[in-house]
Amino acid sequence: MTLQEWTDSLAERLGVELNVDLRLVLDLARDAAHKVERPAAPVTTFLVGYAAALAGGTSQDVARAADVARALTEEVPRAEPA
Image (cartoon, rainbow, N blue to C red):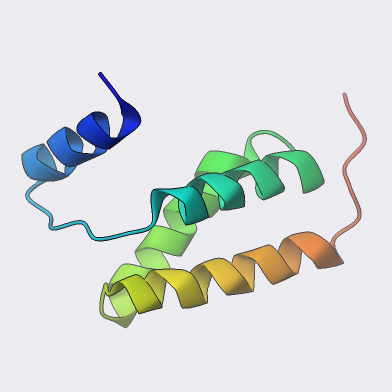
């Protein structure tokens, strides 16, 4: 199963319409994992999705929330590996 197929199937099962740039979400997860620490990736993408949904849920809302998160990853010092 491809990532797109998985995403489409999950969205259908959750009963949500999804029109989001998967590359944007993956890039954000990568940035959070590498610039903060690995567990920041799922937490960051969840919070961005939640914020976007509260703002209206459009792809533009996702992009705006992702921009906020990405900017924050640039501001914080990188965590030291445990």
